[in-house]
Length: 220
Image (cartoon, rainbow, N blue to C red; front, side):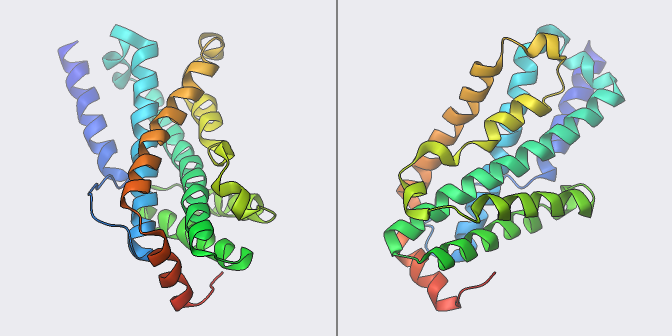
């Protein structure tokens, strides 16, 4: 158990370094700081909730599973898919808030969302899988926001729709063990994003963010 635990903890430390987890409490008042917040909090929530679910489900067997290279590979795959879903959800929430407060047009908000999403992928490029999968994530996000009404999204809880499903789907746990977990697992990631959205509300200067984006010009 001692060797397994040591290996497991070493894996977690290494994994934590692959997706950006830098955190600070500075004001979010320009586009780079907005993109950084979305990317770092997406990776933080993805890893925290995935590892938390695995540990809770496996109990005392959790450390020993890190002796299984197939399991480790499954964790890496799951982590990245959950991150992609978290990035999609949080980008939409943050941009909708900026758009509503700063009176961005539909086109301006859509362009900011694509920019922010692309920046999140780029910030974690070294940890991401092959280019084809990343491009599929990008296309799925573009499709998701194509007809999105940004003003409605700013007041809706539906922004966080993809990450709960992704956590439940991709967590490397046998289906027969998962079958009673869906509600608890999906709610756990929603609760985690509750803390993130409160932090964003406290730190973000929404009018300044809108002005900064408009000053840069609408981009795709």
